[in-house]
Image (cartoon, rainbow, N blue to C red; front, side, top):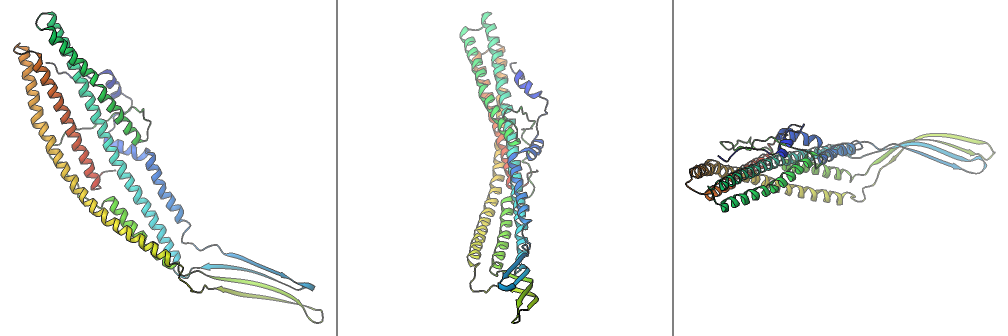
Length: 404
């Protein structure tokens, strides 16, 4: 029997690292904690909260002073305080716009978290597939080397021709060189996962993921409101608040103030007369023109654009959920067929060829061909299972059912 599981020292060293292998759950948690892009996105909330802290407030009152000096001791001094007040409920509308902007920022961060979760799970799947592909290639190289060694012994014993032995040596060397390709893919997948996790590219990462195909298609919770559609709903609400605020800005502020005035003058006989006054001052703008009409038109156009984008996102979300569900079913059927039909048949064929070769009924050529065919089917099985798990992650992402 030629098959035997043997991991090379490089893989054993990788798997025996101090850090335990990552699961999709632990990798997602680390990504949500350490990813710099997500940390930057979360600052959107802080920015919105900082902006909102200055909205919905009255402006600072104004101190007004006027001094007028004349000849012969005549003069006047006035000191007053005035405050500007909005004629409409603009302060309340500003607070509403501020609250909507914070909600929008939170929705954008939630979308970023969902996207990062999907990226992380896909990256973990890619690294798990690369690990399996590398192990498979290394096992094939080990088995090819064992067969070449055995055939060399048979050649020395006069039981096999030197041509068969040379062919086995060539196949073994070819299998050993072929390990470089999955090893490079493993390095690339590890770098991709390290980037998602916010780590250095040379981080030593391993994952523990079960790539086995489930017996039945995995059930998915009922789809909720798509994150993009939810964002569009929040944008519609924010657009309505912007329109209301723009309409309120057409009514300019009025100003109310109090003042104290002291005046000194001389009469015809040279005496001084002093007088103190206390009064109120009003300033009301005249509605000569509608200064907010262009701003209202702009906000209304923006609201129509957001409404159209929402309709497009709803249609896209429904189609994406349906398409992803169809893809998952098709991927499951294809992978199940390979696992249930092709793999057992290829293994049985290899076992029969090895038994016939051991009895001396055939030469090594059929064994080579059976082994090559089994390796191809094993790779196809791995690719089919990986495609199913990728489609399952995309379906969860489309239905917004990915656990954070």
